[in-house]
Length: 379
Ligand code: SF4
Image 1 (cartoon, helix red, strand yellow):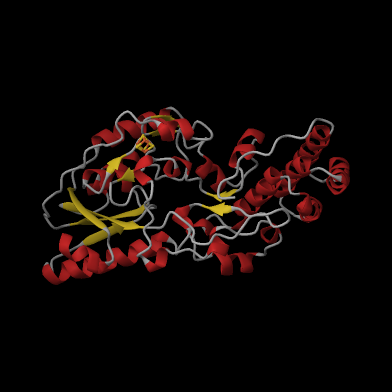
Image 2 (cartoon, rainbow, N blue to C red):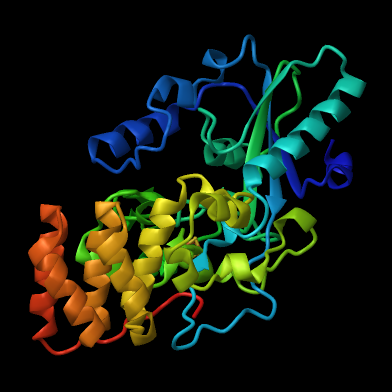
């Protein structure tokens, strides 16, 4: 199977038993008690840790990894009047759920040719099992302090998926943890979401925040910079990842205009255009609202005066209060006459109390010294 993996488009493959994951369960119970869940997870901890609850008489789990790029070739420049946001590297190419599903399908065909009695159930990300716990036990990589699975060859720039089977395949040994004394990722996390080695408070994680749909607090918005989807900081700073940029999987190669898009055109984008432009990326799974909100946040953080008219239009016309309130915050940072006029109008007349409050706060901020521009990712 190892020898066949490359020809099936799989970069790493490993096997683990279908035994339960008791240590993971303990960690998940603690994680829940501390309020660290994102809310996107499977809520049933037994299903997440007991393969036998998902599949009749499981004998082994095959874990796979497919590498993705970490760098944009010839990235478009973000400049005044044409500021750009950035998507997480995991969302640059074709939606990895589809990519991995195809690999697992091919792997199942390959296995079935050799073991016709094969039964299998594959999962990628949205399945009940923890891809990372399976990959760690199957020897795909060790679990870094940044909660990512990594190895020397691919770093953590890899998608993970797995297949529960009825075949008694021999298990692989887990890899030795090579993080050592390093704590670079923990120290670099913009919001302190990495609360300890391998422990993430998803509620504070920028990746989670970019995928949420509501209003964000001011501190989080400042720290988000120009990120439209995901974060990647804990992977970018990791010395294991340095210099690793896998470009051999065609579906994972980015269109730079999608990976690092102009922010202003996003604000007025309708559903159909959004689906046409971003529908193939995993970044589209929550729809356009969070990405549009994040585009407003990015423009606010750039303090891009040229975008004041576009942002003011959102404040005046967008039917979604979350976007109008975020536009008010952004205008408070952008400043200038256009911003002041739109804010004064909204503080007085917006139909939603939350937007009026956001506009009033932004107006009050205009009388204070201008905030410094923060650091942006991928600028
Ligand atoms: Fe491990 Fe250091 Fe990489 Fe964090 S930055 S995952 S501690 S090697």
